[in-house]
Amino acid sequence: MIEKGHAEINSTSLTWNWRNKYIEYSKNGKLPSDPKESRARQTKGARFMLDEDGTLHRRTLNGPLALCLGPGDTDYVLREVHEGTCGNHFDDESLIHKIIRVGYYWDSMEKDTKEFVRKCDKCQRFAPMIYQSREQLHSVLSPWTFMK
Image 1 (tube, rainbow, N blue to C red):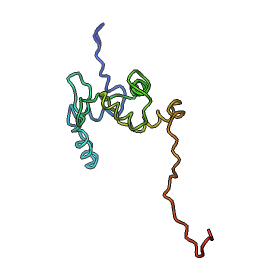
Image 2 (image 1 turned 90 degrees about the vertical axis):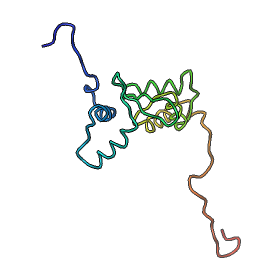
Image 3 (image 1 turned 120 degrees about the horizontal axis):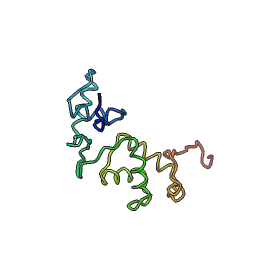
Image 4 (image 1 turned 135 degrees about the horizontal axis):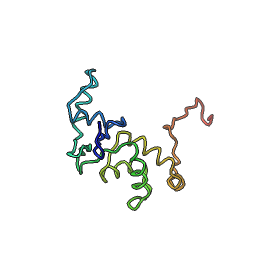
């Protein structure tokens, strides 16, 4: 029975996303039964830290702790960093580094930024035109001179 005005909801258990497995590992030390997965979870779990408020942060090599975002927040951060006051239409690799420097992280950053930059009209319109072939050039040998 819930008294009037007193209800507590654990928002991390309502929706399952990539952060929940690291939150469970940080709180309880809970590992999967598969030894390969548990080893990977321990290795990757060392990079993450749980705050007193229950928010998940990722340790970066030379910068502040990066706030781990869920699926709903990533689109806003991408738009703000790419097009907002601090952005000037970066390519996908620069955009990833800029987002991490600002202090955000999520699991599928590379895939999401590539899609976002590919869909950006200004980036596609003013992108540098590269006139290089995608493969290395092969020399053509002929048995006789001037027979190419």
